[in-house]
Length: 456
Image (cartoon, rainbow, N blue to C red; front, side, top):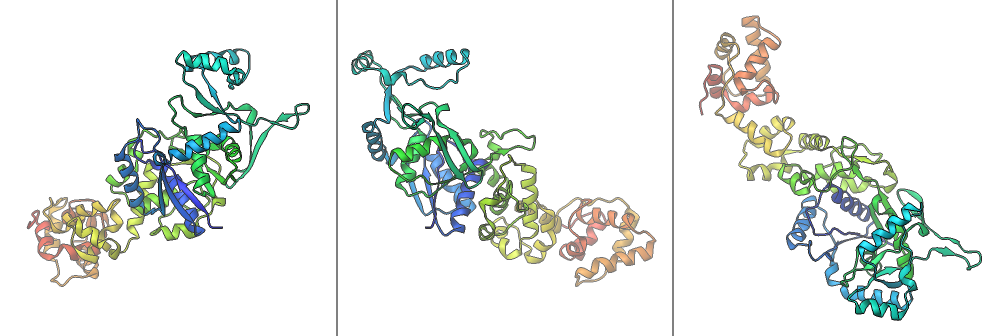
């Protein structure tokens, strides 16, 4: 059966690199196996969910080329949640509770003081109908917990129940259910929490594989029981490692500089972001790939490491530069034109090895066409070199023939020859090979710069 996966962001902010890693891993997995990719907007947080973030999520995914086959919104699925909650209430797995947060906090502190785990004690299950009615008459509205199945066997020989699954990245996993509190699924205001809505959606949308961060491992134990309580087959699960910064600490989700929008504004290439994000934390070398098709062909969950995955913006920037260095002119011609950068294939081939972002081509176009401020380090050498400039037409052999003539005439060689000429011709002490750049500059401009001026 072809897999069906979902990427389920909450539209409460911009997507950051951690979100995109999950989105990309799911996309590559399902494309590798010929499945379907669902974008599910988990927008039940009415206060924080914004339409502007919905639009931003779509924009970010589209920029990366992660097209989706179906879009769903949790805010449109309330009737499904109502029906599922009713089934759980009827089966006795969803029960009302009335404690305030302050009461729960005091109870947890007492448990900790006694050396007990701060697990909800199910006191609400002991309430009689009359006691519940009294609490509600006082103005308390119930919130609803899911009663976990914590014991296996008969009452006489019951043992604590564990939930097991074979994680496609982490291998055999076990969660001791008795160590967990019965999770709240429905708030006092009647709205539903993620743990519940996610299971209902995954069940009804036919999700076959849930691939997400390892911070959801414990949730998985609870959700497997929820699937079973609703009479649904749980999907396969895979939990990838979380991202850490170069300093070894967890990345903050609030760092705007790590948002996909920020990467786009910095001029990073979509395939640089995709290549880096898809390959870090795997056994594959982190290298630039020109298309998502290439990444799809090599994708395998078995390649993922369980160790924390290091994400470094500097490494991403370097990968972006490497991708551009390998990019043919045909792939960027339209974008260069949109930026107002002309010069054609010869210009692009000459300068692409010296830029980190496409916009960096502007600088080298300015160097070629002027005006620039020539750097005259050795006026006498530059003057003699000007006298020896050969006539046009020029090609890649011109630089070698000309500098050899200057060397023969002056006796100057090595850095003492090449550095002053580069400074005069480009205003910089480093950059593209001059054998490619010199023909683009042209004889008239080169002559002016060697004399300390510029035509433009």
